[in-house]
Amino acid sequence: MASVAARRVLRDRARANRAAAAQRRAVARAARRVRTGARSIATHVIATGADAATVKGIVKALQTTANKARANGVKGKRARIRRSFNGARNVVKTVYRYTREQIAQIAAQYKPRKAEYKTVRAALIAV
Image (cartoon, rainbow, N blue to C red; front, side):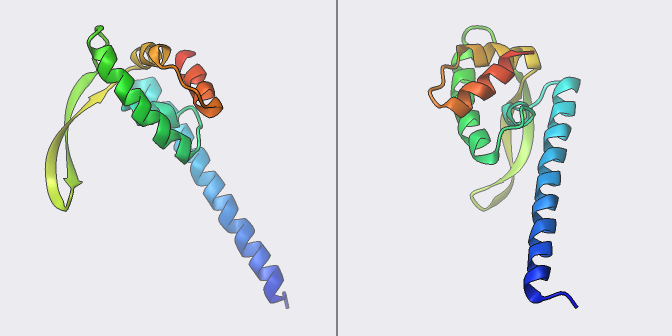
């Protein structure tokens, strides 16, 4: 009979393996979607393989840069989605979807300071 400690080690290892596999699937899924058409900025960043905290930070910075780039002719495809927002269901929001080339142009204008953000920026520029 396996001891409690041995079962705990096996359970934790299995849990870590499932989490790692889920992360790999998310990156592969995002990369496939990015190749097929216009997607959100977050999908493009996830496709680079960045971790969740980095994704959250760089997406906000790239959205700000995208708003500035919109004046320079880099316009994403507008889409209307329904989201839950502050307790209200089915709120219609306007979002923008970008192609890989447009994301490369936006990332070229973005000047990050953090090392993690610089690596993601380099991956986004390399179309």
